[in-house]
Image (cartoon, rainbow, N blue to C red):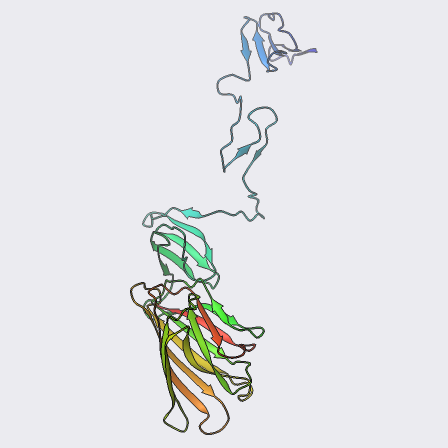
Length: 330
């Protein structure tokens, strides 16, 4: 195929495909595609031949950059793409997102993900990493490590209370467990509100830590009622759980529940055995001497940080509506 272009302003150009053409007349040039290279090539009236696809400054091939811009091929029909969609309606996902600082705030931070509750308890993080838990708290790594040291944004300093978990039973259950408890607080506070399904006016509630079912628990309790004086005084050494005191059961007054409060100081420490301070209340009837108030203490013979708790009634199941609240105290 041969054709000529002449617009009366530029030299005449001959387009030719196949073998190299003869040297054109003075002032003319030839553009052709040799069968050997299949590259667009120019030959001018001086006989100079230039492969236009290899001219310095031109693009002869494209190479993509891993994880940034991907090229389907280096030459020919090339398609460029990104590792994931970045359209205005897209939802790209990143392992982390780093931000540099402006003048006066030059320390970089990274948003590295989220947790179910509390700061991360595993993994390796750097100072400045940020985590958001699904309970609405923001955590900042103040000292990098595995898992590092974390502080909660807006914690209010010493004495601030943060809800870590809330479990409300939608149906009867033999126990209530909470795991993956963050170690970012100074103390752990558990509040149990509910009753047992066993056919009695009351039973007791039991607590195990970190799924330890061995005989590693000691406890003591005492209670008083509206008649005055201590009604009972009991305890246990080397038990398989801590006795938390009495809770309402099925034949106690309708719609009544007992309340149990358990405070565990230094629960995340690894130096001492864990000590529990317990308070509970109970109502067995609408009559004198039927309202009880009790105090108890317990010990777990372990220096391990507490990361999980399990509460069970001594008899029956926890009834629908029973609630366990877990708080961290700074």
